[in-house]
Image 1: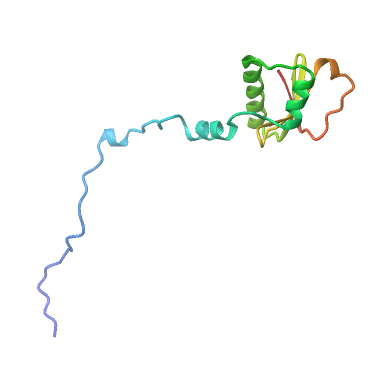
Image 2: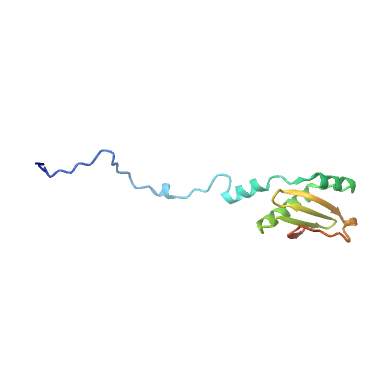
Length: 128
């Protein structure tokens, strides 16, 4: 026969935590920007040029300034935001076909050779 004493036993592992303060509840901004910003920067990386594109630039004496490179990178970022995969980037005297996924310039055509060219396998165009 079991005799009940009327006492309830609580094991010591049940600890009562104090309520969080207002400072604990405050949302702190992430260090280094939002996740989306960091992810976009990591995905974008540095723009690369294929061997074919480098040969085209060299044979046609096309030199890209830092401003040109910034404009191209901005165009690539805009195309990426819209979900583009392969884009034609049109500049005043230059056209580039860029693989957005690989962040690589595939080919380059200067203004003199631009006429009567057909660009295939692109899904978007960005005019700079």
